[in-house]
Image 1 (tube, rainbow, N blue to C red):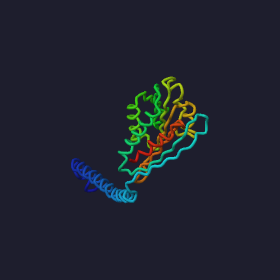
Image 2: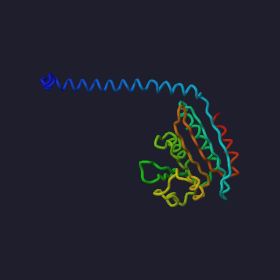
Image 3: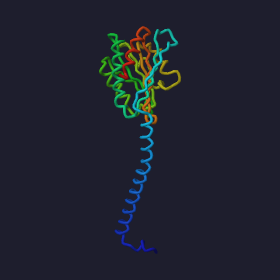
Image 4: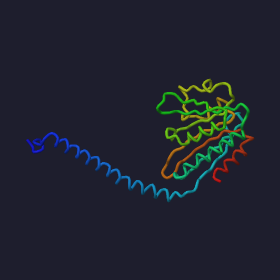
Length: 226
């Protein structure tokens, strides 16, 4: 029998508690030590990256008879500026919505949550304020990182549930969301994606707009960085 086994029960428990506390302390210290080089790497990457916003877009025809053009916008934003860019982008989208607005426009947000069996069909409503609030939330929602969110502008009728089957639709599937934009004959539409990569947050935005409105939309996009 060891000396530890001869100790009173209360003393044994105290020693076990102290051992547990020491193990926790050493574990916490290890995490802190490991975090130091990670923090240094991130700081170095951030300084090397710089503070400029890198925004570019390309416009091309859509391969159907809708008369729409597709505008692909890519933005490389320093991580420390990711609080500002969603506001700028949302403001620009609201101005685009005002430019293209028809009297019975209704906005819809469609995305798939990995934790849910069906796609989420969210009727945002007819108000620009509702569209802006929903968009800026989606651009900051951690569950939407690396996922495609679709934004459709449709007439008040029919309801979105009559046009999209949530059990089968996936915005990230091959041929999407272009297929949905064409199938619903959206007046104008948008897809948003974002992800954190190194010292940056990368945003990819696709706009499908009427051909005659494309120059005005591009003019608004040019002002995001101003």
